[in-house]
Image 1 (cartoon, rainbow, N blue to C red):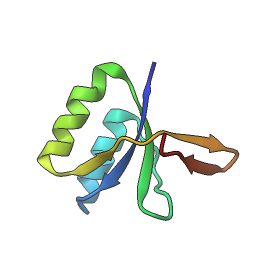
Image 2 (spheres, one colour):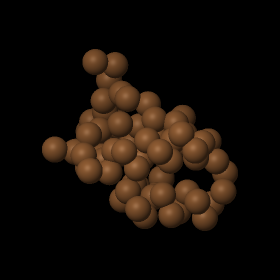
Image 3 (cartoon, one colour):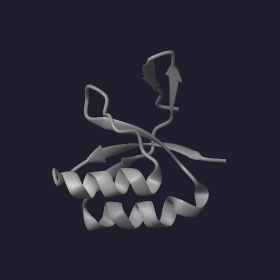
Image 4 (cartoon, rainbow, N blue to C red):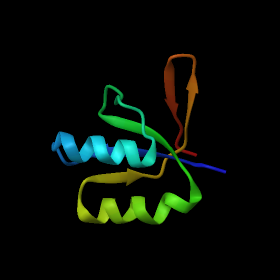
Length: 76
């Protein structure tokens, strides 16, 4: 089962962002607050965390759901 989490981009390098989005199948948009909701496969979590340690983005471990065209971020 995929893990739902949120990516907050730190880097502004467009080629790095595009490569990371392609590798982890992340959507090509962000919310108004600059977050990218993501569903990550269990086998990709370690690589994703390594990218975060390098400093491309930070991981916000917060659950979310999509209601139509609107994302709802929950704190539980």
